[in-house]
Image (tube, rainbow, N blue to C red; front, side, top):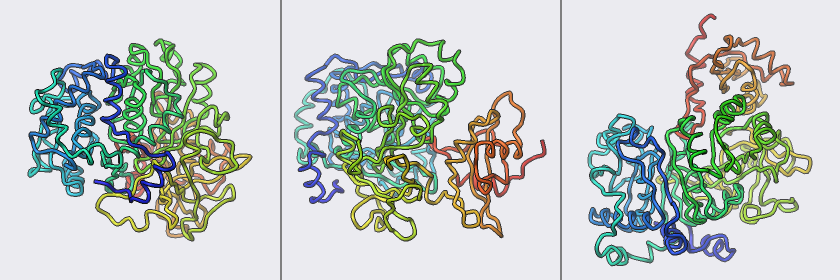
Length: 561
């Protein structure tokens, strides 16, 4: 399956931005160069999570295991362009699946373990899998039953009982069987290797097909931002179902011969222990965990993080105070990532954005001429802002517009839906993200929010993400997110949804408004309704689902304190 046109392939290949490397090709190179280097390591509590023992796999063993799995899948009728849906936590077997399916020239669609039969049924009708790979035991639950219920006509294979996934003996005639496949498909770097799914914050997730070349471009951009070096040890706590984990860790580690240490679901104590025990040099962490570590120095000092070179984060605006504590007190640089399955791949580092205030929510305008950026991402990327209503290009600072991007990381369109309005006439992908140009030399983009998330209060546009970040600075607030609710006069007003900080007095609407006023926030942006929640609704990618907040804002009455 190819989605890229011949013209696009020729253009990006000629420019040196796409090449001929596949995921299994990267593994073959590491087997030649570093056969005994650790390739993948499970987290210590894997047995309690899945009923299977933790594994530590070298590149050579990973090659043998993926050969063994590929032969088993071949015997089940899986080959070039077959579609395999996989629902597994971050375990070594999932990594083996990626390489085995790549060796077959098939397509893998990895699902978050949180998805139930409803989501599996909906996505299955779009993807039409030839096989579903799952597991019967995860945290004491038979999550495989969800797939069997939803996709009764699709063959199901349990990763631990039906498939021998971590074989250390290469099957007889494996090379002969695999080499008999159509190499024009299997070794095509423009072949679609994954169909991942959008976050689904505003509706049913959409399938995002991506080729090896698209993932390689993402990996190169993330490696540039993270400063990856050959042979480093990387800890990945994000599920291997999206851009951050697949592009930022799986492809990058295979490309550079790095050791990929797995963690999932996020357990802060276990995660911190792995950082120490595995002598991790780079990791990513959700903003909430970094905020907790910044404000609890005793927790940070309980571990030895001397090997840790830097930390990445993203998916929401970061706290400038958190960045300052990590860099000035803990001496650990923070890299802010802004990415998506569709191909957004921007980053903000201490080098590109020395100001912690800017780095918390701003990103260099890579690809823009006459700006000081250097490196792969600057050469490869192009971007522009357009007015969401008129389509006019915005070039002046301070005017929100929809971010549109182009380059080797960008996909070609969603699976099974009309993509007519997805790209501009000049070929830029319309991200749906609202940003504005900022900085003294207009060299940055500031994230404002989603085009559809913007609250329109009497004609005044309000960015929810801007208020989210400010509210979380309130000492009584652990988490915060705002949304709009209908108003017959103004159209919309602002509702603040918060999780109260532990051991703190219950926060009132008046105290929130007073706090925002102290920060210099305009009066028209102040929330006029407050909802206390135990947790904020989030999707598997940890992004707040504002549509669910809107339901709470409209239907749930705030009880008297």
